[in-house]
Image 1 (tube, helix red, strand yellow):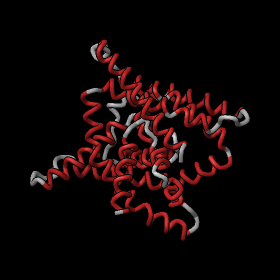
Image 2 (spheres, rainbow, N blue to C red; image 1 turned 90 degrees about the horizontal axis):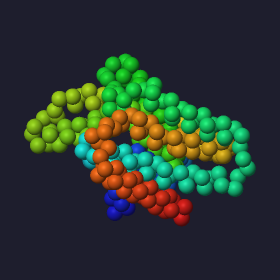
Image 3 (tube, rainbow, N blue to C red; image 1 turned 90 degrees about the vertical axis):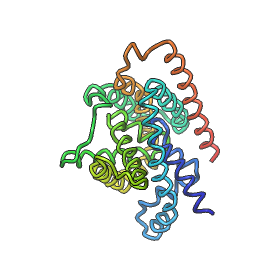
Image 4 (cartoon, helix red, strand yellow; image 1 turned 135 degrees about the horizontal axis):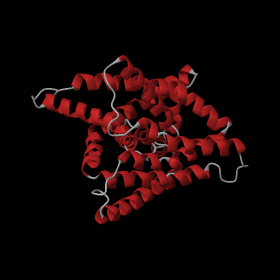
Amino acid sequence: MKYIIAIIKGMLIGLAILIPGVSGGSMILTMGIYEQAISITSRDKNVRRKAIVFMIPYVIGIALGMLLLSGVMVWCFANYPFQTAMAFIGMILGSLPMLLRNVKGKKFSFVGAVLFVLMVAVMVILPHLTGSAKEAQLSVSFAGAALGVALGFIAAGTMIVPGISGSMVMLVLGYYHDLIGRVNDVKNGLFGLLGGQGLGAGFGSNIVILLFFGIGVLLGLLVVSRGIKWLLAHKPVPTYYAIMGLMLASPYPIIIKAQFTAAILTPVNLITGAVVLALGFGLAMFLDLKDSKK
């Protein structure tokens, strides 16, 4: 029974990872397994082995959650792009109090302030360098493979920090729609195979691209997580200042990349967008409250 519960918890973590603005690290913390999760990169072989064994059912659940629920994200973006973006922005802004709590009462850090401004500047400049989020796509090529590994590396490195969303970073960089669409296509292909309809066109290329992305995720967990663990342990205030700058300014590239037209910005959409933004903010605050009680 405990393995089934672990898989279900993993599916919830997988859903959180899919949603830009919801921190996978925060969800892992909420589930009470954060220490075990980051211990898979421990230099101690015994600690690392125990952590890996413990995390296996959770990893299975995460994979199932991402595979089965990816279609929901694709549907939301396809049918309600403005409301979906507003919900994500609400979740991002609702995550800021958790980060503020980590620097509250701490001595002011000049380095942290510089990093904060630098991260804000990066978020403002980035969307004008990477193009439209809906147009960015990975390809089955050497350059595409290298980019896939790099994106996986970045996603894993950011995902493990409580309060920051790896999916949000992918959305800002312009590859969220492509990656989530490929995951959904793989799911549809597998269901099509079970139904006798075949895997469908593009299944092989999707698997190859997601494989390289997965390699990057593993590398990110092994390499970046150790660096982030060191920074949070030895330089927590400047690190959290940098993260706050990243999070605070991240709604800007999401809005810029969405390229909303006057036809989308109708009074009804503006009202419903404001409602779901508030709901997203409230959800993130609720998860933050759950985290603070751990």
